[in-house]
Image 1: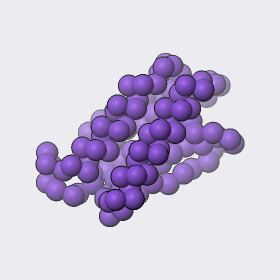
Image 2: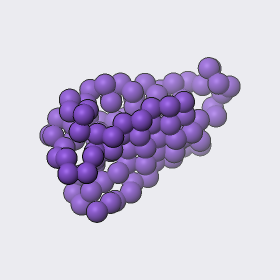
Image 3: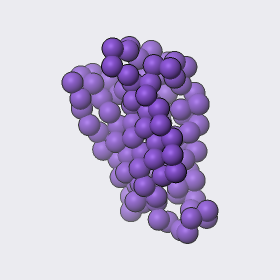
Image 4: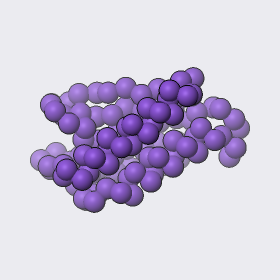
Length: 106
């Protein structure tokens, strides 16, 4: 199962962590994993101020969290919220393969 954690500060989304594999099909043929990866990587490509984020991308793991003392732009807020809504729609169809939660910090 892919586990997605959206990180919030007191009022807004400031990042996400994506871990795991959907296990819908064998590696390389998993359309659920492919959809999740496309949404996440495509969304991160749309972040305008990527230097303001701590980003790590590895096989089966993505982290993109606003660095301490940085302010998130309105554009980047919209990008993170768009990623969230797209992943929620995947979860609605494939709840056995993706789990989304939120974690508030600060």
